[in-house]
Amino acid sequence: MDLPFPDLATRPRAEGGLVMALPKGRILKQLSPLLARAGLEPEPDFTSESSRKLRFTTNHPNLDLIRVRSFDVATFVAFGAAQIGVCGADVLMEHDFPEIYAPLDLRIGACRVSVAEPAEMVAGEDPSRWSTVTVATKYPRIAARHFAARGIQAEVVHLNGAMELAPAMGLSRLIVDLVQTGATLAANGLVETEVIAPVTSRLIVNRTALKTEPEAIGAWIARLRAALDG
Ligand SMILES: Nc1ncnc2c1ncn2[C@@H]1O[C@H](COP(=O)(O)OP(=O)(O)OP(=O)(O)O)[C@@H](O)[C@H]1O
Ligand SMILES: O=P(O)(O)OC[C@H]1O[C@H](OP(=O)(O)OP(=O)(O)O)[C@H](O)[C@@H]1O
Image (cartoon, rainbow, N blue to C red; front, side):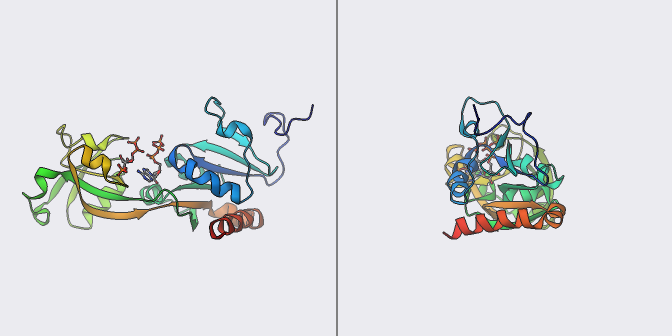
């Protein structure tokens, strides 16, 4: 029987085949209709909750998908392990990889990176008088850069989630985190005091790969641009 998507291990790799790295989670949900409009159909396992696979074939014999964490998408693309990918502008700001070119704003995953602090502290203090401040965040470089630009030294506590707990637990005075509706901040007694940057998801490309395979990668940029405009 002919399988529509033969197993990767036995499938001969086409010369010049591309790998696209996609994040799991919320971005992938919003991205799926856009990929479909761009004519990209992953093998059925890609959307299966039970599949443990991480690399998938598509209806394009020269394109495979890998599914990784959002932060890791940028790492795979920066090092050329994947040639193309999708991740949030927050991740790009944090890593600041020179090898990554971000040609398209995909207009999904809209939120912002913001500073927040406990509501009861907002009224009492003048931030312009701070020289150091403790900040809990998943974004140590963004936080350090932001406060350094204001002449404040940030002592950063690096967390991977649940930053909103940190001030109440005595771990930090402030947090730097993503905010969309503000519901998570409100539920944890925090107030957004400053927006550092707006965030949307971006199509990203490895610069060297773009030079060596301009047609194949350019075609994907064009398909996704058309899908966005259509
Ligand atoms: N509340 C939000 N609203 C809109 N976009 C968001 C929101 N939270 C995160 N994002 C975007 O989605 C990306 C991935 O989000 P997040 O880091 O929360 O990952 P996740 O989907 O929870 O998976 P994981 O933490 O396991 O990588 C972020 O980098 C950001 O660009
Ligand atoms: O302003 P809101 O609409 O409440 O969204 C903001 C929340 O969304 C993200 O968390 P997520 O749900 O991805 O959980 P995480 O802590 O695992 O990243 C982010 O880290 C905030 O906690």
